[in-house]
Length: 353
Image 1 (cartoon, helix red, strand yellow):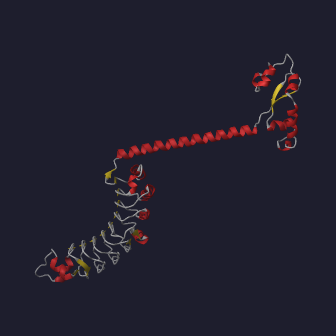
Image 2 (cartoon, rainbow, N blue to C red):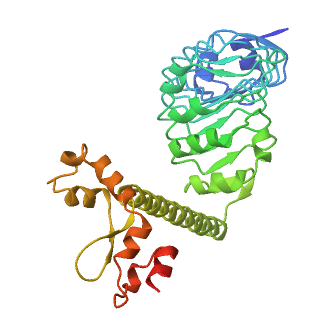
Image 3 (cartoon, helix red, strand yellow):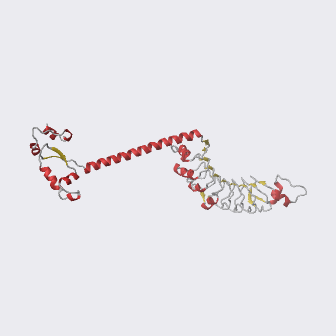
């Protein structure tokens, strides 16, 4: 195994020192160090590399992130395809903009508090135990809420991305080869991520859902690319028109249903409150067909209100029942004529004729 030391850096660096330069002077002016695929398993103190901004250490055997505390000018750190299981010792890298940690053994995205300038985080394809998924520490997400613009979480068995709603400035999300299943969860996410213009969810179960693409395009006005395919203005406008038409039909159907319910309610109330009882009431002159509703029965009985007639109602009903058709018929004379609009009963019609 090989340890990354200052001597190794001085010997292998592409930047050759001048004859009059000391090793210290030379190390101070180095900005880029590339020791990828060099069988590196540990990082030693790099504090003398004051201006180091880009460090390539991918495809090695590093198991711990150490001795980078004093590399305060570091902006790009490449540690993908190593043996790292924990994100640690990066809190002092205030200028770090891009962090590549894909292909390690990381189970939880954590330890990034204080990295307020981090714009890109790549943690794809972690080598996790079977059935486990990549998790996010809420404290880390909160610390990255303002700065992070690109997040790659592909191939990590992730089935829920609602925790990412806090990343308000995210504009690219790559989550290929996961276990995302619900379109509604993605709709909620897009409602929060107002600056997201590129999202790739290829090879997730959710991509097979009906109207998956249409629903996501409709919910996000900022999205320009979905699953590697551009969203053109014509496509978005067509879907917006289709949705507007569908919503209008739903509103119309709901209104009609409501009106029908009201109509049925009125009809039911009318039948209940205006129960018609046709009888012939004996009087001088033309016999008339009288209709007794509940209210009319009260008035016929000489009461001022329906409440006061409740005790007399049975008697009125009994009296009307005792008035037989034969007795009513005897009241008619040959010269009497029934009013046509009052003939509601077939027996009455026959009697009038």
